[in-house]
Length: 354
Image (cartoon, rainbow, N blue to C red; front, side, top):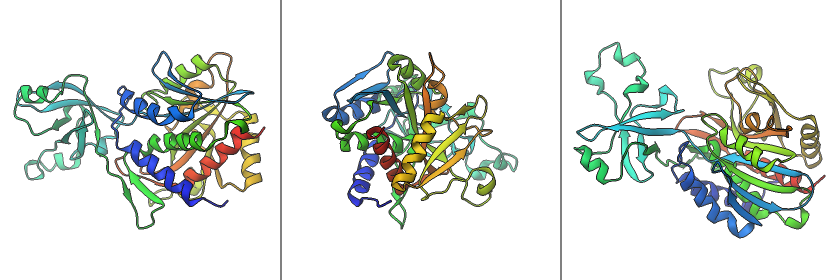
């Protein structure tokens, strides 16, 4: 498969634009409003469902197909403010190992840091223990609760790790927080910009879903609202091609080897790809020589919007396509842009061919 440098550059610019926005679970409206402004000129209709998912009607005729990518990221919610201005927070999905001594943005624009006890003052036991999630606090550099509140901080405010976009010496490799799932959102935006509606073989809807990270909730609501015949969850997936992992045995996914397709997923309830969707996906990848990595992630705590939506109502023919990324759910997620380009090419073929 030949990758177009212009498409790659456009994707990177769209992705960087999305990554600058703080949008943890439950506080996604700033992101969906931003995306709404981007997609409106290219869409037949753009609207919100009752749950708050952003739905983009692209057009076309045939089976109703929903492509969805979630807009929420991991972060923090403010639960209280101390008299001397420190912010007590609850974490949303962030692993305990990735909490302390991190730069954050509160309410998307107030700089702060997740505090940590000075190493010199820690006991030997404390130096080897993870922070108690109930003791997480953010320091925004004020000295009173009134100062914090004057900046707009209140119970229910939010925070997320800072924008930290970085390209490696190989510029195809991108590192940043929240690649899960801003990368998927960027793919859908670039698909919309590049598609010719006259070529569509389906009635196409793009859905930017809420609260995937806390229970796959948005996609379930969107599926109920739209009642599509088919859906594809567009997301990222951990890859095990790093030291300490047995990737050939446990999770054969590598950076730079193409889009991944989950044949099965879920660490508790399991979800399996619909055979009609599977046949079409692999027929197209064979026909157009699109690199693809088939995977099974059953047994891992790894599931996508497909798990929540395909069993709704009368049932939906579902599939999951993902972009491999290292260091998942950390502030330094790492992906290869070429894998996203493989996904974009496959989706373009999927929506324009029977």
